[in-house]
Image 1: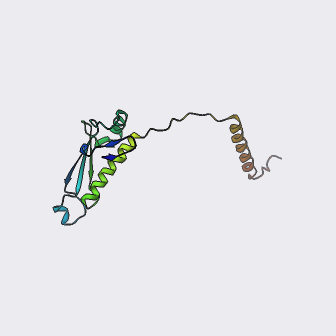
Image 2: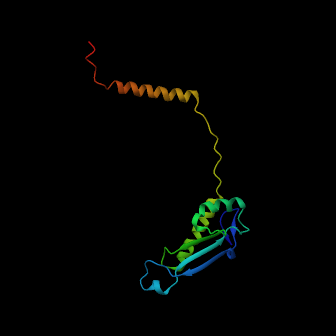
Image 3: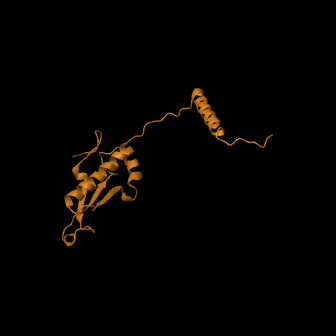
Length: 141
């Protein structure tokens, strides 16, 4: 059981992992050991995800989600299989947490009359200070 949040947890059987050979650093070891992880999670048919989260997850996953609704994560950042496995799982968990997050409802407010006056008074004072720095105009006589 993988706990995502107090409301959501996934069964281990919902996540499928395949180990493949990774590109990148590792020397000769990279040709022998399958250290990269391909994680596959069927989000569309998961009984543990609410519909709201599934819809939002489609947008967050983007190209990592197939037409069938499966999320594919390729992890080959690290040299060891265990670290890549943890990396792929943590990326999936972070994606689901982001999809679960509901933004706070913001009530639009207007500035008060007093705050408008304070702003305009400040602008007037600043303008007075700046105009006091000008060179005096001696050609008016």
